[in-house]
Structures are given as structure tokens and as C-alpha cells.
Length: 305
Image (tube, rainbow, N blue to C red; front, side, top):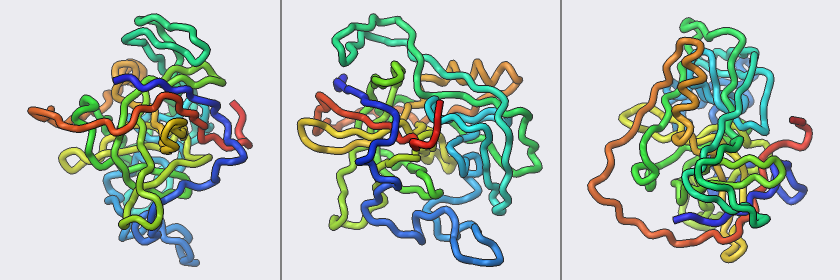
């Protein structure tokens, strides 16, 4: 099922909040670090919802490490360095050397918001970028690359996905759709995952959140056989003009795995791809059809391309 999307802009608008909106924010659960200790201003939070040893490759900056020398981020939110934290709380910052934006090859005809039809097989720039560090990270630093999710969307649907946002917080949601998206002000065509925000305050306690400005380039992970695997890099937010439902958007990593491996392979590295077995049968109902979603990117206004 293809949902028609109008992805509008990649700049932070005045109506967009500056911090992710949690349905039921709990710092003891959602903050990666504990604040306020003068002896250690940013100690690891022992009650964080994830095991710190499994997420050392998730950057404190918008970056997710995928090899000792490469990380993924949003094309529109490039930074010149990336900072990661080891399982013992030690921080390491590495300089970026170069970047390569990945490309989307359409598997079927795609109609732009202006009515132009892009033919199947045509190639377009995406909002997913591989950044090469100036030097490989030493194993002694204790920063481990993250595995990448390699299964189908049907095997991902219904699984808990951990969404990292700015201020080094994380919540959870499930993916509702996988969709090709058009980014109007850059021309990027990106395979995306959509997370509906459907547990507002006042409902039963939830880890659910809604992206906001500044969250671009951060990662979404799911657990497979005890290890965390990257499924997406944050792209934007949008509203269904028919229902008023709001959505967070990721660039979906799985369709780009071959391109990612080709890039990291040039430096002699291999990405770690993991997947879950396909279920014998899938029963789920798509409760909403996005016919016209306006998507606003998560980039801060102070950044320039």
C-alpha cells in the first residue's frame, strides 16, 4: 500500500517545538545520563531503558557508528565530528573526513507533489548519508559499531523500536508504515518509516514520543536476539491532513544496505546485518491512509548545508 506524501521542507518552523514530546516523560527511564552530580556532570543513568553496553555506537551527536570508520546521519544535518560514549562512560570525539549521500532507486513510478511522474528505475538523492571518519576508531576506545536491520518491513511491524532524540533521551514506538517520501525543498527522494503519535498525555503510561527540531540524524533501534540493530535515521515530522494524526519520520536503512556496504568496503570494513525470521503469516490492519502529509524536517535553524 502506497501512501501519498507531500514532504514539506527541512528547516525548523516557528510552530515546531524545540524538544521531543514524550507521552509520559520519566527522566529515570528516558534520560541516558544523570545530571547534577558535580563530581561527574554526565554519569550514565543506571535505570535508562536500554543497556549502555549495547549502544556505544549511538552518538551523543547525530551519528550512528556502522563500522570502525563510518557513521550514518541525515544528509541535511551533517556535522564535522561525532562523539560517542563507551560503556564505562568515557567520551570520545572523532573528526569527520568526507561524506557520501546515498541514492534511492525507485521500484515503481512515483508522483511528485507537482504532478511530475518519476519513472521506476530512476535514481535520486536521499536524506541518508554515510560519513567517513578521518581515522578508524581503535578497539581500545570501547566504541562498537551498531548492527543494521536487514529484514522486511513485515518482520519489523509490531516490534518495539527505540527512538533516540536530542538531549540524549530515548523513548519507544512501533512503525506504522514504510513509504517513499518526497522532500520538497531539497528534491531528495527517501525510503522512510513512519511512527504515528497516538498516545498523548492522559493516556496509560507510555514511552512514546514525537520528534521535534534538532532530532535529525539520530537513530532508531530494535532488539534482535539480545543485540540492538539500527532501523532508521530521523528525518522529519508530519501531519495527516485528513485525520490530524501526527507522525515522526525516519529514513529507512534496510533499502540502502548494499550501498552502505559498498562504501564501507572501500576501507576494508564489513557492516553487520541482522534480521528476524519471517513470520508464517502476518495479520495487521492499516488504520489510516495518509493522503496528504506535510512533513517538516528536524534541523535547527542555526545550521547551514
